Length: 590
Image: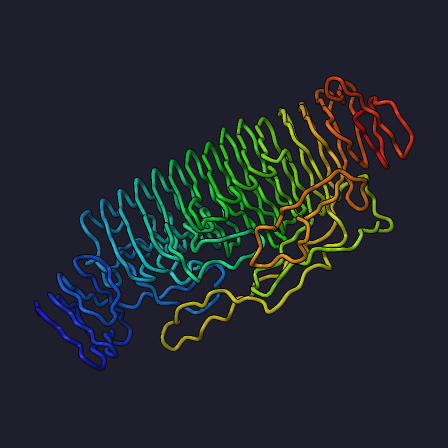
């Protein structure tokens, strides 16, 4: 062992593994690897950045071959990037020459399994375990604890466990605990299929200026704890996943992604936390099966840039939110199913739908909105991710679009909701208008976070520009069907108003996004079509304005005890009897 090494100036090139008892790197000096190699330092077995300072103890510098990986997700198609990892599995083989055994404690590593290993580190970007190529691998009882930033979580930099390419990975009884911005505990990409059983993943991220842009989804914090991209599929069974950032089960840069959470707890909590429990974006399906989801923000978020993003809440799952249980925006045909005894508890409206083409199907579920609104269908006030973007509150009056049919909803553009085998208490409103497309200002479009430097000689990846979702704006007709259901509340077209004096929403006051007061009002471009089957009951609690009402024989439309109802169709009073009524359909409570 070389007991002491002092680098006073210049560059010390380390061409072989080096064990030291003390290393001093003076300011202005540096340590580097030969061409085609990389360096990782551990101090007493803890991964530590090689930078100016004094290091004492069991100091070990590991020289590894370059680990070059073509990025996926939002950086798909970019040049290969250099990674470093404690354990590298490639095409079914453990690769010692690209791994850093000095950071791995205990256990065993083979071509097929890693059992009982642990690792700790405080270096940016360093990965725990990377499984790639055509590999089938199992990780049992691992412990990974890292501090430091990941710089770019889209591609898995610094992830605790990363599965890409055609990997089939099983992770059992494993703990991954992070403290760092832009860093994922687990990253799934390529065509990988990963199953996590009885695992615990957390990222308690610090305050960072590199937090997410403040945009329509009201995010804050500086991390998302897991990431799924490309064509990856992930199963979480009896897992606990928590973040204090802006996302827990995250999807971005997906082609076709699938996430199945069963018997698991998903949490987003903390003084800076605001975001989502799961985000279904693009061609994506996410399932909560007998899960507990506790989130500051949206337990389930949907937004697809025109894609069909889907999800399911099933088998007694419980969602708790200090905002909305489900939020849907930028969708073109996305579907959410809530069934089999699931419970949605929210401080505000249960479902917030912002100008999206969406399908909502509720069967045998409990909905508990804190503000008494089940469905808040409104204009999309998403103003994009640019720091200069803003949303201008419209001051005009909505005018009827000539020829627009308010008595039916277009499957390509409308909002469809079915309530079956369920008893709900709350209101359903449609306040969409033709004003919002003209109420967005877009400044310079924000670039995505930069990638780390590419491999020597490779071209840098082009900047990724964030999308503008202006084309997702527009009026919507709402189609509501009640099947073996009981509903007590108002079902109506509506107006929407932000708080008095509010003229503009931008990054500084984005808590005002979606915070509107809806009031039942005659429809202009916002049709409401409601139908009740023979086994359904509607207890009307306030004046409701519809454009089509279908009452099957056996259905009951009534007022609360001591009240009476009056039905008018195009201004003419009409008996409430089985049939279909179209036009200006108004039900008043007297």
